[in-house]
Image (cartoon, rainbow, N blue to C red):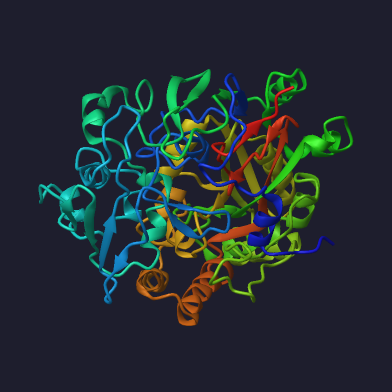
Length: 525
């Protein structure tokens, strides 16, 4: 049995220490890093997507007011310091660092920060993650077209501004460190709206957009004039390769520096010539099955209970994930505040599952469709195995592979009956995961369609409550409801990622699933 340690400890243990920007670096011309990546099939604009794949490219170019360090502490990036917060938790006062310019030479000012929220809440096209920020006073009125400005954003001068919240929101500053809150130059965006995220993307980051091709990939070039000293690597090439086998062959041929290592290939490479190239990364996340509460069968609590007995999670972890993951019953990852230590899901028992289906009025069994992304081979293997297990328990699962863009569109519309997903929190606060999946305002976006008045009330209260044991207890109660009582989610393992990385790559960083290469270097021969 593998020794279990907290997810945070794993993150710290598996990461290489990040060097400080501006430190002495071995900088030379002509260093190129090539990274294989699945095609997100969307432009480079966090206004429209929640993909970690896009963040891995976007974050090299566009920066936020704050960022997370390797321990998930929030630290200033474009802001001069942490904000001053009023005693009632409603008014945040900020100062920008002075002298920062965008890649096009225009100065960063508070007008650009204001534009972030005007665009995010725009009635012409609200940002996909706007709900993570709509506690700002006047945001909803601005989106509804009832106001010409976001009332809660006040410019004092070019470098000082205030944000007034409608209600206290404990993790607000954490949200300002997420990629969705990246600051872009207002006037440059307005002059290039049609090409934004493809031909044009301007920020304050270590790298500039050189080229974007919807099928080939993305090329970034270092900003030679970056304020704290340029990054060591001159060019980063993110190559879109959806087929994992093709990517591995390209790596073996010496054409790639970094490639994902699938679970099914891990043992072969661990015992082969590339064994020393394997890097392990843990994430603040959980692998899980989500059942749609709007499905005619899964709206029945006895059917959901039966399904919990229908899947042998231990066997799946051993065979699909090659024993590289640990089985979990909790929705929240280890190390997350508010994680309930007493959560327990049923063990595999197909006989018990059939009995429950009969009690639910389905003596002949239940038919349901599971949908997964065609490029995710592990998910395909998961459903092949789960399909056979569930059949013995009375569930007839039709498995459908779907293009990423189509799958995401269907998921966001709340129409996927059954899916397996791995999801990571952006930071160490339970609100980031719970609200996203189980608040009635958001649950349709994960095709959960879970709605519960008590859970909504607890999640709303948790957002407003100060960090305390009482707040943790609220989230422990939520986890008890959504996992044990209502079986709105079926967690089965923690989340990890594996890369093959060429030895010439020095200090590669993948923090919680997102590549950060601005402190990475290449050892030249």
